[in-house]
Structure formats: C-alpha cells, structure tokens
Amino acid sequence: MNRRMGTRLVWAVLAGAAADLAGLGLIAAAAWLITRAAEQPPLAALSVAIVATRAFATSKGVFRYAERLTGHDVALRAQAGTRERLYDALIAPRGSGHGGADLLSRMVDDTDAVQDLLVRCLLPATAAGVTGLAAVVIGLTLLPAAALVLLAGLVAAGVLLPLWTSAAARRWSARIAPARAALAGRVADLVHGSADLAAYGANERALGQARAADEALAALERRQARVHAAALAGGTLVQGLTVAAIVLLAQNAGVGSVGTAVLALTALVSFEPVLPLAAAGERMAGITAAIRRLREVRSAAPAVAEPAAPVAPPSGPLTVEVDDLVVRHGERTAVDGVSLRLTPGRRVAVVGPSGAGKSTLLAALMRLVEPASGTMRVNGVDLAALPGDDVRAMMTGLTQDPYIFQTTLRDNLRLAGPEADEEGLLRAVREARLDGWVERTGWDAELGEDGRTVSGGQLQRLALARALLYDPPVLLLDEPAEALDEETADRLMADLLDVTRDRTTLLVTHRLRGLELVDEVVVMEEGRVVQRGHHDELVAVPGYYRDLWESEVLTRR
Ligand code: ADP
Image 1 (cartoon, protein in one colour):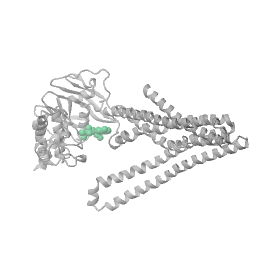
Image 2 (tube, rainbow, N blue to C red):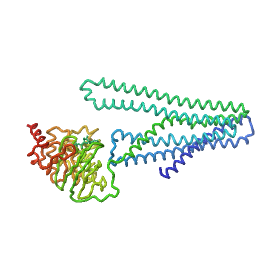
Image 3 (cartoon, protein in one colour):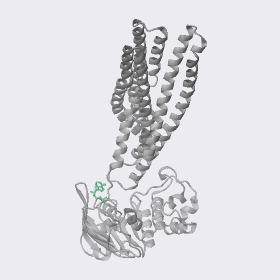
C-alpha cells in the first residue's frame, strides 16, 4: 500500500470513529437533556445540551457519509491494485498448475476479499475500538466501577466473540468447502455429460447423486447458520447484561437519575459498532484464506526466468540451433540430450511415440519450460538472453490444444493479428483452406461456448490460420492432426505441408504420411534422438520409423 492510500485509509478510520463518537455524544447529550428536562429547570440551563444534540445528530450523518466515501474509495483502489498485480503475475508462464476455474475464482472472489478486509473488518473494528474507549472514559468520569463493567462487556462482545466466530467459521468452511466442491462436480457432470447419461439411462442415478450432494451441503450450511445466530444472540445478551449491571451499580452507588441515564445509554450505544464485529470475525476466516491463496499465485516462481540483462532479438532469416538439450519435469527427464538445426526455409519434423518428449522440446523453444542443460540459439544468440515474449514473437504457432474463444470467427482469428486487414484475414483462411467454411458461416458467426459449434478439423484449421496470420519467422506446429479421423487428418496434413513450403518450420507429429516432403525427420524415443535423416533414408533402414511407416501403409490398404 503506498503513502497516498495510507493517508486515505487514516481519513476513513477517523471519519468512521468520528461518526460513532457523534452517535455516542448524541445519546449521552440526549439522555442528559431528557432526564434534566424532567426536573423542569430554566430553559437556559438546557440550551447547551439542545445545541449539542443537534450538532451531534447532524455531524453523525456527515461523518458516516465521509467514512463510506473514503473507505470504499480506499478499498476499491486496493482491490484494483491486487487485481493488477495478479494479472502481472499471471502473464508470465507459470510452473505451478493454477488455471481454469480455480484462477477465475481467485480473480473474482479472492480479490473481493481484499475489499471486505478493509470495509467490513479493519475500518469497523478501529471505529468500534475508538467508540468503546470513549464510552469507557465517559464512564470513568461518572463511576469507575461501571466503566470497568463496560470494558469487560465490550471486550467480550468485540474481541472474544469475533475470535470465536472466526475460529468456528474456519472449522465449518473446512467441512463445507469439500461438500460444495462435490456438488459443483456433480452439477458439472450433469451439464457436460447429459448426452452420455441419457444414452445409458443413467439420468436418474446422476440426479440422485446430485440431490444427495445438495442435501449434504444444505445440512452443513444449516448447522453453520446456527453459529451465526448464536453469535448474534450472544452479543445482544452481553449488551443487555452489561447495561443492567451498570444501572444496578449506579443505583447502589447513589448516582442520580441524570447520571444513571447517561451511563446506561452511553453503554447501550457503545455496543452498536461493536456487535457487527462478530460477523466480521466470521468473514475474516474467509478473508485470510483468500489472501493466502492470492499470495500463492503471486509468489509462484515463473517457470522460466527472464534474463537480467536482455539482449536485442536477431532479425532477418533465422537459424535455430539446439545443442545437447536436457529438459526435466521434476524427476522425469523428458528431453535427454537432443540436438537439431533448423535453417531458414527448411522444415524439420519431429516424430516419435506419445511421451517421447516432442512437446517438451517445443515448450523449451518457446521458453515455457527451463532446460536443465544444453543450449538453444537463434542466429547465435542464446534464447536465455532474450525476453520470453521476444522469443515467442520469433518462434510460435500451433499449440497442442488450440482454444476457441466465445466470440466471432473474425475475432477468433484476429487474436493472432489485431491489426490485420480484410485481405490479410482472407489470405490466412485461404491458406488454411478454411475459406469454404468462412463463406458458409460468415465472418461474424459466434463460435459458441467451448467452440462446440466447430468440428475438430475446423478447429485445427482455424488454429493454423491464426499461426499463418501471425506469420512468425519460425513456425512451430504441435500435433496439428491430433484427435482427427484418418481422412480429415490426411487432408489437413497435405494442406499444411503445402502451405509451409519454404517456411522455416518445426513440425511435431505422430503421422508419417507426407513427411517425404520435409527436409529432415528427427525420431525421438524416451527423450532421445534415435534416428534422423530424410524420409527416404529412414524407410530404407530397419527401426522405429520404418516399422511405423509400414504399419501406416498396411492400415491404409
Ligand atoms: P510427447 O509430446 O512426445 O507426447 P511430452 O513432451 O508431452 O511427450 O512428454 C514427455 C514426458 O514428460 C512424458 O513422460 C510426460 O508424462 C512428461 N511430462 C510432460 N509434461 C509434463 C509436465 N508438465 N509435468 C510433468 N511431466 C510432464
């Protein structure tokens, strides 16, 4: 928090305390006024109290307004700052597996917690403390014993009760969170699996499970609500007992009716800002958990460190050289001493069974994972000396799992070229052989939730069109034909090999058809390069490549 925010926060605290003090003053002055007036003194004896009552009544509203204004201003600024820092933390590719719904909830709910911490906990607690202290001081001037009883009552309602509700809330949320997650899982299954559930007549069973999860959650929440109710009742009880004890003490000590009224009403009102602290205590449990989660995201080390002294990226045609590269995922060595060279305009294919380390090799080149050893260079410049974004501007392309955004076809494509004109967009879709589809659906067709309106082949072609529109100096393509049926995959690969002619391309694939067109094939197994050469050379010798080639040829007959 910077200094300006700190100053604003102090103003908010002061305004809140002033509003509560004005409330206290209002009641004390009014109590004095009413009881004194009952004794029918001359009016002049009451005029100060009358003015004071009016002044307190007006200033209470003004101070409360000022508190809300400054308090919310500080809280919203703090929340915005937290969001910004979270965005910054998320832009860098992370090693830890935060993503999807989890991240979304951190962005929305957990940053709300920052606002609540200030508005619902810190500000009210400080104002309540100041008011309670003032009431105790007023009590001390009239009857010290009453002041001590008031102090005890305020501590019970304002400190002990919130501590108890906070601990109870923590205990309950530890039980409620898994129940809520279980229900969310059941509901997600019902929504996403509706077709399969219907196909196997399992609807009723799944509904029954969802209902049971719902009931379990509701039962826990009902029991948690009892804690809330008990805290409310407990606070009011402490307030009532304290006031009653003070009245008794005052009477026993022979304090007059004016003094007793002032003492009792001051005590009663001083609880007003204190009682909501029990609910604040409950909220506090959630807030501390949210802040811990936010810290986790922000402190997660980036998967790849940015260079301390970055150098300028090379320009012009690029040559990529990988030497003896080793990449580990934890204990597991995914890439184990791979070397390759990609010169301008050439195409290299990396093939091998699933788990061979092909995607990890691409991830290392895109600076998404940090290698354990070895070097990667472009035109002689070490990739580690370049900012990650500069590396990805040079080398990028088709990711393994392309995502369709819930927007128009045009905007889905423009992701890779926000400045592209109609002609550029059209060229990209033509090269990706997507022009027929675009003509049928139109540029402004909404691509729907999860891109479900898009077939697997169209999805890959759209991703290819993005890559072609972005047109990086080195095109990286990860399994473009993954999860497609034979015929669609064949057509896509043929088009892809056609359009990448003369483009510097690294193609990861598990299909061999058409690879006679690329300049070099690198065969990987268990992280190592086991064979390399032109397709014609590789099919001529026994080994993984020829076996796979023969089985592909056989299945096509
Ligand atoms: P391929 O692309 O050839 O199928 P990958 O590069 O995806 O192979 O995976 C190589 C090995 O590394 C596999 O054993 C895989 O289980 C492991 N691996 C890949 N990504 C991760 C990851 N993020 N965390 C841990 N292990 C991983």
